[in-house]
Length: 395
Figure 1 (cartoon, helix red, strand yellow):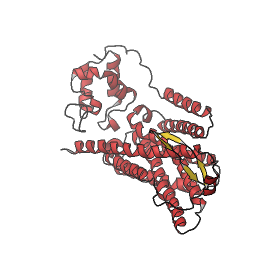
Figure 2 (figure 1 turned 90 degrees about the vertical axis):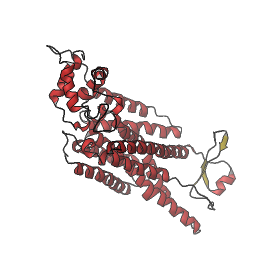
Figure 3 (figure 1 turned 135 degrees about the vertical axis):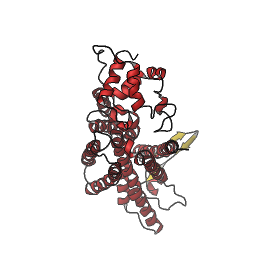
Figure 4 (figure 1 turned 45 degrees about the horizontal axis):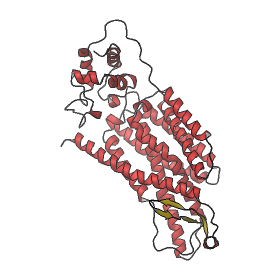
């Protein structure tokens, strides 16, 4: 088996596993935020005496559930405690392996673009790794400095940092790599919150109880702060992770601003749901989020088709010379750069080229998404040739 096929298999399996464990982590995060915001003060004197600060009743799967949250901790520690950490750790580990397989091993194709500042694959990989580490360090310092300040102030300062990083990476790396590394930076921050703060704080509370001491509530407060941050980062991370399938976002002019606007919209929508858990409905938040998304998509929409240029349109034979030189290394029955033709699009026959003409025009001319990273060095003149052929009827 050749290396391209092995990389393709590794990407498939890692992406699948990453999706599975990510669903488990995000589901747990959403559930506990909903649970915490939905608890009601108990009316049962027995529960109040036990130190229960909130409870609710729920029905699911044919059974009744009565979750209870203690103001600090129960008087007696139960024999068995369920910890929620491996969902987060597994998501980060599989994500790092996936990024390494798809981007770092193939940095020349996935992280480098002719119009970006970095042209050395090693430098691009180093920038990606530094983004993950540096992003967490900046976030952690901001959390420490602004712990007792307004959550809105923290959100504004940290949001400005994320947008600045998006602009920097958009200048340095290929668009899809820039978007993905912003998502990976936020995801790394979320996992680091669990590893360095949430779980250690919970362990300190448990250890204090086992010594017969009352747990320090500061650990719960810090853990709650980081947990809430993770909740708001979830939707921006998810968008960044799927954005590599949508070149019209990361190849748009001022792509960093596109990413920033979509992430802001995601935070506004998430905020609406967090308020709704508390019984507060502020419809202006999702309305503003939807408006930002719509305006962004309208802004980056490809220009409408222009009329056919004067003169005879290029022939299929003429544009096929472009496809033979620039495209069939991937888009053919026996590609040499990848294991199989991406999305099943083949350009090694006249019939296949005509059938894929609208997609060719979109990806090669409008979005300039293909060839990926322009690894085969297609020129603007060649793109113009394809455009004139398509506008002339793709014959």
